[in-house]
Image 1 (tube, rainbow, N blue to C red):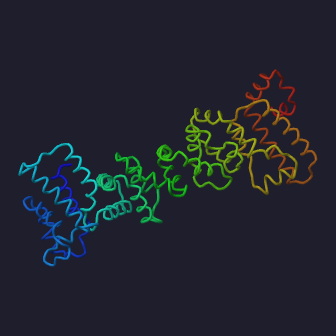
Image 2 (spheres, rainbow, N blue to C red; image 1 turned 60 degrees about the vertical axis):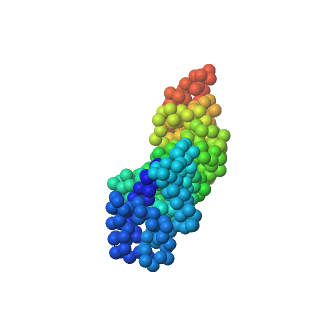
Image 3 (cartoon, rainbow, N blue to C red; image 1 turned 90 degrees about the vertical axis):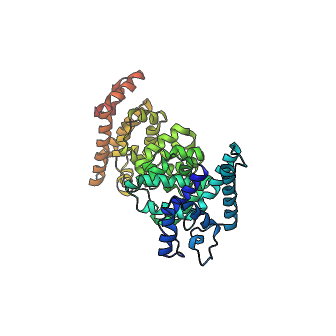
Length: 413
């Protein structure tokens, strides 16, 4: 950015300001600021006067346009570059070299935020908040422009920007179908520091903000893992492993796959598969065949049956009562899980023995509801055996055995 472009930027900032300073009247704002800035012969002197005029000057309103963090410091640096530019361009007493360009770029990055009506960073933050609250797709170009300014003004401190944004929005901070295009502009921004500012916010806040964003933008997993490779292990894995309500079920399988692909050691599969609530998520699987295979590689479905589903193999009447009525469990998820497991001889033997204990228990029952529970479990075993008949027979054959040796399974085929 050249010196003239820098001043043009200041000019545009003022002309595009949504609000005038309270201490400037409507008439003065229009006649002495806006109209003058629109005049190509007068605008540059007008900006110079805004910097040089004291804000308490009762005869000149221009000193009230900006709210500088340190007026004398800003004025001194501005004047230095104004004289440097004149010296190089007009008086020819100095030369512009690479060092001059670098110094000016640093000056511009450090000070451009000062030159916004009603204060720099606060003004831009307010603009971001307003854009967020009232965003429509037609605002996309304007948002891109704002993000560019924020990138320059906040530079390496965009984490502060998003912290302030989060606090300002408070309960209005949401990620949903209505504003996902707003967030998409930030997450897919060509300004890395803008995206990184948001990722820092996610890293520092409670875990639920991660899931809110992940639902719409799965790529944030990689972004946050690069920022903090302990984040997933410390905040996300414990949620997946926990045996309690999980409010983002639609994300479960996708996140689990990403974790396993990234570093399988940062999640405890054995602990995760002890949760009956997680087992029920088998009903929501909508994965490609190769993704199912990746989960099979980790014995996930077998472990679900062995851990969360272990009561499915207990067949006395008290166990059935506890399972179906006290715990309010159903067999559907277990049955579904058998569609994905790696069959082995141990699983076949488990089914064989469970059918035996079930039949023995049913024969001894007299209570109507207890008998019905037994019939429900029998139907589940029948479904599993018949749906997986070829797999069961293959396992038995590969073990050098005959299906007839498995008397109870044979009855169900």
